Image 1 (cartoon, one colour):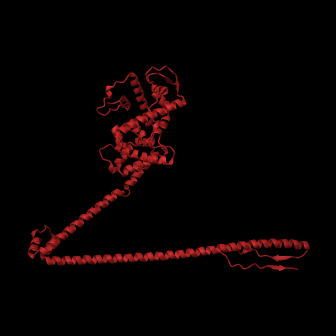
Image 2: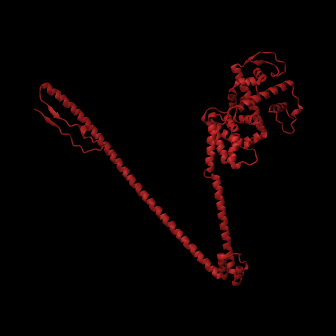
Image 3: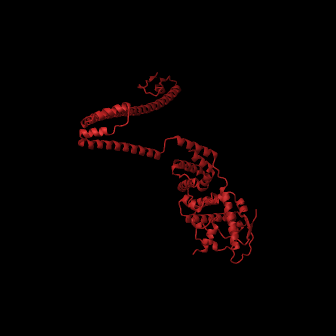
Length: 200
Length: 272
């Protein structure tokens, strides 16, 4: 048991954060995390020594999060985000302004990033977390979530696009940027044309 | 042939190498695209950093989990482990039964065809290397060179096993009889309990009825008392001596809630 507890303890913040970011109701995070750890302990004989314990544990956590989100969906009216609205990042002046200084924009956003992240589907959130935060490869993510690699890539692309779209919408709603309209060169995307700047 | 959108996807997703055979590197990016890609990469990295911040596992939760894991480690084995253990037990039992059956079958096969010489040969062919009590037992067996003696021994053992089985059967029958008797006693006690419960319900209903009667009598007594008071006023107005004694109906109520047989109140009336 000591080996199991030590392995969990080594990555417990990673595991807990994964659950916290993936369950729709953050107040359930403690319960889901505890349930996943106890379930993993009960089935620890299924882990093959010498393989990636972190990936095995993330598989257990992902399953528990999916189950918890299904139960939350039954209880509340918050449904899965509309996939039709998961459009690519808007090619708008606001987005161009964000790309001018992403760090400053994110500093201004604060918890808005988490709110935007919660608007993604569970699979999209898991893919983004496993790829960008926990640095798993596409193949490992596909094995953890038991989906094809192509689906992982699709979830990543759509999730990132949706996340950007949410943040752009937030920037528009609160007026973070004071836009200075300038003539846009023909055939040139808005990234190259400086259409706005951060007014912090 | 890959489309340009595929190239765009592969260049956007985190800089990981595309699958083998992908020729995305052959399409150069313009400077604007490169700038945009770099900016989006920085945005994604910033988002990842924001998502990675905070969310530490609470110490109290971890301590609770550690305690639970310790308790479970020392608790009874899980269902699968018990099942596996049971399977092992069943397998061991089956193996031992198989050994016993095969040895018995060997004895049965050898018995009709064995002659005294063959039996002697079989018993004396390979004496086991033993000493002490085991050696004595082996020697006694070796002396018993006749299959007829073996058969007698076998019959004796069978008779012993039969008597043991009969004793076990008797024990089982006795236990069943005791169990039946206990069930009968339980049923009888249950019936008595139901009877007592029924009587208690009847007594309660009678008590409620008597309580209602007492309440109505009390109300009548109050109304009579009011009438007598009215008559007293009339008599005093007329200058007539009017005296009547009314017993209080309240005095008849028992203190502990039990009901007494109540005689009708006596009225004493003295009219001039």
